[in-house]
Length: 460
Image (cartoon, helix red, strand yellow):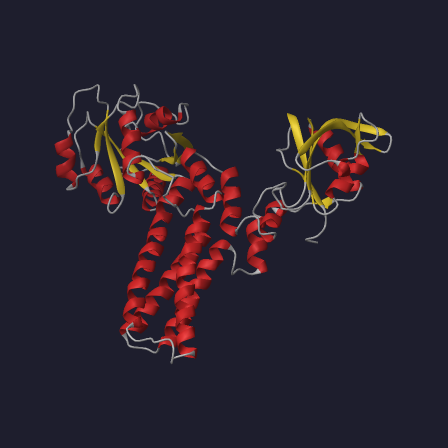
């Protein structure tokens, strides 16, 4: 099946100006020739050079289906590294379907989800980390996620992993050569040299693993929970951030009973916002359930925004909230800054015993919101992110492989410290080498490849 000629619609389903049908495989040009007719009757696509565009019509026999532009790209200079034809037709749902049906009728088979990218991988045009970056580009939610995915697509992860594998392979080859030919290759003093090399490798692998936390936030967004007492202004803050009346706002305390969730982008950062029920002691069973949901949501949050009504004295409910903040990244907002304050920055510091960022805001007027955005960026990304030479691991599979490699390298160090024979070093070095190969696809099974590409959208 991998040698069949495949076809699919590569643009979104729905009425649009243009729809694109992609054909890839040995017979791509021949199939296109059977249905493409130029205004110049004798013009055949099979006679045309690569990377050329041609105007004409798609026909099923004598019936004209649509007026089109057809692009011819010959192997290996195409996305799949196979002969590829792309038909640009009118973007109406029915028009696109008719053109695709005609392509399939004359010899192609329907492509599976992700099959074009899978072929690019199998044909050696891209490695597995780049293939995964393709779907990340499509699914990017913000500027940082897009830049990170483009960085991976350009091969930044591939280059780094290739460099690490080459260094490990050199050590494996040296050990094997020395064991096979001890008369000419001495291992004297080698364990100390290897120990230093493994330390450096561990440093670089650990840095990649550490980048995965920021990578996840870049890709998926920061899970942000808004906490506070009833009527502190949590729902007003949510409405201010989303720019919509997402949450009901009234003067009645306890209006929010359940968790309201919204996703927004602030200055290139995605926040997965959860507005929660006001935390207070209550005999109302429904409100109690809402409070417990709020606390549970806070446990798994990347960031807690604690909204304090600065015009009201603190009480035991504030202490209950402060207990929820333990070991979390927290920004405290002193809301209702336009009113006389009962709570100040120093009050908050004495209440919490920690130096949390405190910002005075007005959730109704928007005062202080820009400072909040800047503080979020500082907390998570330490200012602007540069994708020129920094690598961020945004993929859980890649992180797992890096952890496997890290564990294997640590075992090499343990073997050296224990004075084990050199062939023990080789075993764990090979394990690290293989684990890193899983990232680029040089050491993965067919089932995993199928699973990865099965998550792609149709036509890509």
